[in-house]
Length: 272
Image (cartoon, rainbow, N blue to C red; front, side):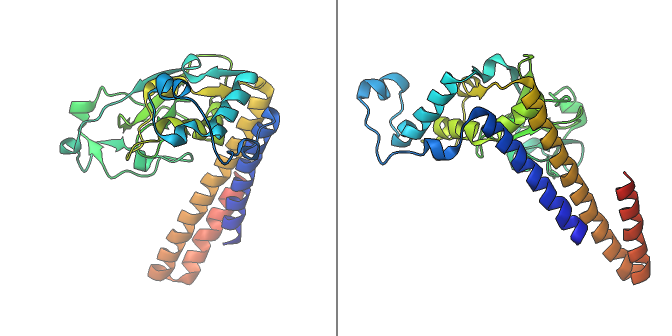
């Protein structure tokens, strides 16, 4: 249990450190843009410009964030990435085997959780697949979840998950994924997608999201910390799975055999 807790704690530590390094470079924190008790704006500054009537959209905290981003070195997301979307076949096409079909509920910023939904290989063989360094971004329901894939993948995403592929040399994939998961973008998504029963982040709004651009060396530092966190998170998951298997073997073949399996795994893991 101790090695498992160590990996989990260290993974969380490196993730927090990466986020801190990002905010430190930008001299930005959520405390500095907390809302005032009220916001006063004229009709010509609100509905006449945006077409939005929901009061939360005009909360002062959003203005403060965007002012800070505009003043700093930032760029619209649409100028940094190519945005494409996949398909929405409908539940009638769901099968128990075939090509994994990933939906928003299967997506986290750390991984793609195992899906129980699949699509026919012959009908959907040409559908869009994520390539190495593609960032998957949710736009419906739980909006703003960003996950970067580390290699070419053989699964299909729903149309509620956009594929972002970097087209500019101003940002690195791991850094961009970190920014997309930060409060900097989360607040922009919250503002755009709010005002309705089911959150829906429009592609035109996503393209306008402001992304802070920091020096590449800082981006590499942030990316390196995130990779270290991801490495420890995967190790934690592997330890957990090995422990479960050891318990199963201990039940079936005896406690000594189960302990030997877990010790062998620990030796191999430490050797890596």
